[in-house]
Length: 570
Image 1: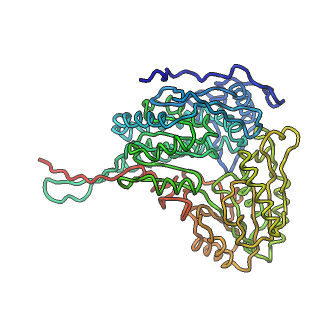
Image 2 (image 1 turned 90 degrees about the horizontal axis):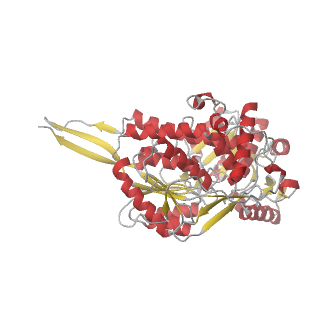
Image 3 (image 1 turned 45 degrees about the horizontal axis):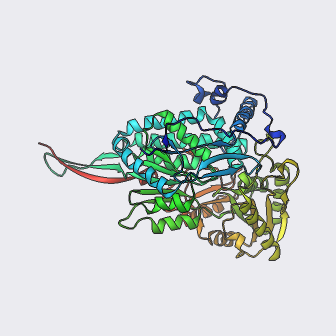
């Protein structure tokens, strides 16, 4: 083993912490054990913590106290020096270089330092994953799901720590961050249940003759590369990783460089659940080094990716060279909402605002376009602005009253600012927002106002391009048919919503909309909030590569391949 590999130990903390804000004063403290277990014993914690989803986002007073204490504990860990994980061992980058990540909520705070992974590091991780297929790939599905279910339980028991990580790492508010922990755990449980119900996807077929039998068996491919984004740093990495592992593959994971601590949290849960060394390898580094090495390696048997259309299509077109190999890609959206004259406008206003501005529009499912009947447009906009101004509070992500926090980085601010300027330059009207927020303690973060514009032509770029910022474009329509044409006139087809109390209009919407995830009359989010076991999540057209949605009965099988067996019995 190379000398740079060292025995797994707790990451090194930065020797000195820069105290820059009153927000760093620790709140009333609870023990780390209490934070992990929400005041319950380890055995019962997963049952006693109330289930929190993107629809409810309901925290009890006790939940708030434990979250605040978890924030205090994680603040002490800001500036920690972590390692990449190869073959179960903590590893420095072969180059010796590190990369720092500052919090989007306050750029004076360095959240973490991680080794800057290289091509050599990635190849080493791939070799470790290949060796681990002998143990993990040949384990029974029952053995695999036992490990993964333990990992899901550990996630929930340690969930407050993960929520605190996400607050500083990506600026996610408390309700959404703890809901993400539950989503990640339930993704694991759903897919473990799926392979268990199918008895490992082994089926007896019709006998071809006396003394002969045939079977269909699904088997793992081998090694999967998993490339995940920062916006759901735990749930999306967990979803793709858990499907790979449950199917019997091993994993080389490349998380976004903005969210490596969340990925490290996942590794700790997998390790402590009993996953063999080498079955999950974590390499943080630039896409040009780590991501491209995964793409180019003949030892990678499949790729699971969530991120931009451009990167996803690059992988889809350029991964397989010698023979076909799976690319399971989710590539974003430009998600429309149709509002007819028969809609409940208060319901529509709330659903649209929550869908557009939750996590500052940084969701591939975020509501970004509204097509509203001209007879109710004025009334709808008035209600939308009223709800947004009163309920969509932008603030520091750890503050209890905050609805949404910062955007991710300066590039996102520039994207948002350019959209505002382009809309104004094309004769558009800024109905609400349009300003950067630099007040008080938000001065050092990437905060912008949720922004609503109208009076643009339907072919303007803000109706076509995924922006990934809190920016909503509104277009009036003459008819439902016209609204449907415009809603479908993009390269994406991820999520879509409809508001109408006319059952015929709702049926028309479902029959004609080109999207993989659809909602009608939803208060919690017009186009957002898919949840394991409740609804599936995946896209059509330029939003997805498989035609089958995650959280659904047809998804896990994409991580496996079929073998037909003809058996002659003596």
